[in-house]
Image (cartoon, rainbow, N blue to C red; front, top):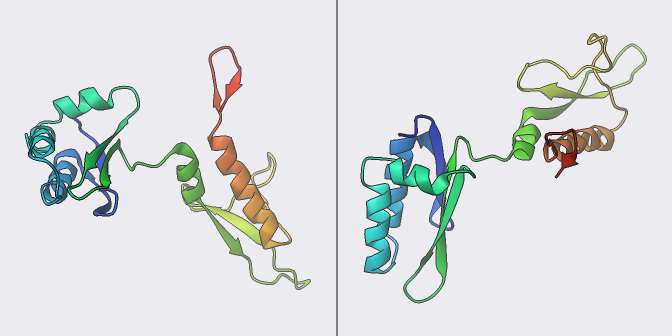
Length: 166
């Protein structure tokens, strides 16, 4: 049984919702059962979403932590049903959400540097090993570039043996 939260959505019909597993599946089922889909797809979705168990869903999500189903809509087109473990964010999206850009009040020389606040710690990101002075930027574009760099780094993984892959 999935013990943590699931994030669910249906493109164009249900915005991303993150709730405990069975509550998330119930919200998804309430949306899917109103879609103009075939009786076959409706039975399959009922079996998967309205069973009160997450065992079959876990089997489908094995490995990737997410699963998508395209459902054919009557009259053409499709709706994509998505389910993810946790908040549904990629590591890069999570890093992007972690940092906020702020401008400090003017100092005694009239400078108003730009800084980065870390939502995880609540403090400002510091420079170097001293961990005393906040990392400061003269213009907003530079601090934005620093955050984008952290987001890009989050997309890299170190593989066993030390090689880096994207």
